[in-house]
Image (cartoon, one colour):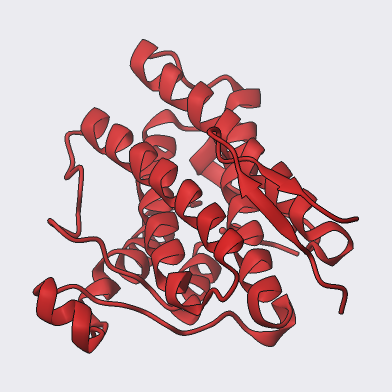
Length: 226
């Protein structure tokens, strides 16, 4: 497997290369339970748990089908970014958002998620996972379902990135992940505020979910069809 060497992360979180899944309430409930409620069941790392009561670190790496080591983690992240980007792109295309504040959220988040996809694909090059096929159903045709889904997806993204942080070996890759997770968290807070929901649903300390937990939750939405 070719080694991908990343140099630095600029102020916008972009990588410079050096060398070379809600159609209904049942699905929404499943994702919410898997992505947010499931965080309470995770076991914490000894040191951090002592420093941060209740904090949990997930270390379940992505399946080998994503690739080995850091490549697998980046492809796992890319797959989640594909999902988010496609979701916001389709909602934008359908023109379902009329509220000024929500429209601003959609425009900003769409741009960010599209950039995350482009950045990760550039970093991975020929090793990049292919974009899956999606069917978002009512989530991109009904504005209320859209907003509720965005809240869950953004919080899921935060849990997913935190869950892989301690698995990443390459410092540059970790820098990229950190630069993305903070943006995901800002998206989550913004949509939470709009909906009148918790800005930080996990409380004072965000938690990580294993890849298996996140993928199970995403699969349960039925968003990914192929």
